[in-house]
Length: 268
Image (tube, rainbow, N blue to C red; front, side, top):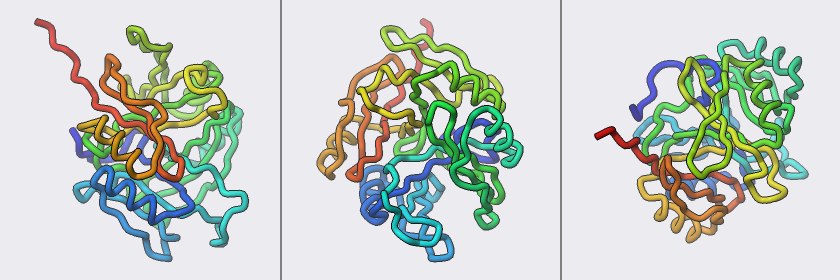
């Protein structure tokens, strides 16, 4: 179902947001690309934009700034942050620190919406944690312009698998794709919620990262629109057993992927 109702199970990616030097430019780009609606938020929310699709929250965009409102120097990397759901932020952070992770921001209350923190796993990949209050996270998924998948790329998949399994109720299992690289699925309650692959499959120098995938009805059209708007084609559209995929970067450099998920063939 495209609509997401109710809380996300702990360990499940539940939200993504983007911190950028030019917030309005990012809003213009993604709203034009995916049909989102969004505007710069009120001062009491630090200007944070909750973008919507069909009236439901789909992603956040904020201006890069220090807690005191000053401009960071140096400017942090322009990347999407994937947030994993937790039903106990403090205990998750305690487990995270004991497992070799590093708390970078938080924990902090976000009004009555929930509590959040940003951390790095032992391999260097940055991710967020979200304990829901009145806000569960993305309210629409798995359709055009909405989040459909999150993927961790890291230089030590064994260490990453052990870390996330020790911090959240996540299990891992190998996934075999014909002709593709070795792949690992993250599962919550037996359901696949995210993936992981080795950094060796990516261009040299790529840091460990979590990458969001958006569903696209027309991957090639989104690729062309991204390039026309000043973005970059990182990996041109290609076909995989799971669907047609492209990896792109927005005009401010934030990587993201788009995919048209292919329905599994039914037995004759």
